[in-house]
Image (cartoon, rainbow, N blue to C red; front, side):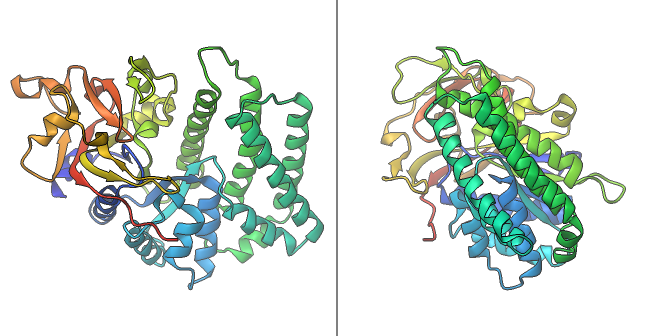
Length: 400
C-alpha cells in the first residue's frame, strides 16, 4: 500500500467507491486500505453509506457495551455489507475505539430500524407514553416515505406540517434531557447533535420532496435519488464540521465508503445505458460528492472500484448475476483496457497524469460497467482520481 502515500499524504478526505455492492473482493480490499490509511496516513474517521442515526446509535451502544459484537454492529447498521468480508474491519474499529483512536458513523438519510429501537428505549426510561408515540410516528413516517419517494404519491402541506411539529417536539424533549444523555454515554459527546440531526432529516426530506418540481423527464425514482444524494452531501458536510472537527492542531482525516454513483464527481456529464435502454442518456442525478463545496473537493481523492468478470450477489437480491452477463467487452471499455494488465489487482492513478501515447484512454470517452451490467460512457479522469481494478470477483458471504 505504500504507493498511496505520496498520492494521499496531503488529502483530508478519501472516497472509496464500488461499482456494485455484494462483491467479496471489494470489501476485502477496502479493509486493507482502511487499515493502511489509519495506521500509516493518520485517517481517524470512517463514514459508511449507512444511516447517520444508525451509525450514532451503534457507536453509542458499543461504547458502553463491551459485549456488543461486530456481527451485531453489521446487522444493525451496515446491512449491504453484513458479510464475512467486512467483519474484520468492524473488529478492527471496535479494537481502535477502545483507544479512542478511530471513529465510525454513517451519512445516509435512509432508515433501517436500529436507531428507532435505540431512541425509543432511551425515551421510555423517562416517558413511556412518548416512547410509544415516537415509535408510531416513525412507522407512519416510513409509510409516507415509501408512498412519496418510491410510489410518487402526493404529499399535502398539512401532512408535512404535522410531521415537522411532531419531530420538533421530540427534539425539544431530547434537548431537555441532554445532561442525562451525556451521563449515560460519556464517550459520545456528539450523540445529542446526531440524534437531533437524524430527526431533522425526517421532515427536511419531506420538505425537499414537497418543494421539488417534478417534470415528465424526471421519474419518481430519479427525484428521490436527487434528494437522497443532496441530503447525504449535507449530512457529510455537517459531520465533518460539527461532529468530527479538529480536536488537535490538524484536521480530522475522513474515509468515506459508498457506491461509485454517490462518490464520483461530475456525474451529470456521464451518459448511461441500462439493460432497458438502447441508447445512452445523460444522468440526471447529481452525486453526493458533486454537491460538495469546491474547497472540500480540493482536499479529496476519489477511488472508483471496478471489476472485469465474476459473480455479484447483492443482499436480498433474488438471483446472483454474472458480471456483464459473461459477454465480451468492447475494446473501448475500461474493463477491456485494464484487463490487459498482468495482475489480478491494480491501482491506476488518474489525477496526476499528463496525456501521452499509452494513457490516451484516460482522456477520451470510454465505457465502464455500473452494477456490473449496464454501461456508463465517460471521460474517466473527469469523475475519479484513481481506479482500483479487480479482474475476478466473487459474491459476498452474507450473515443471516
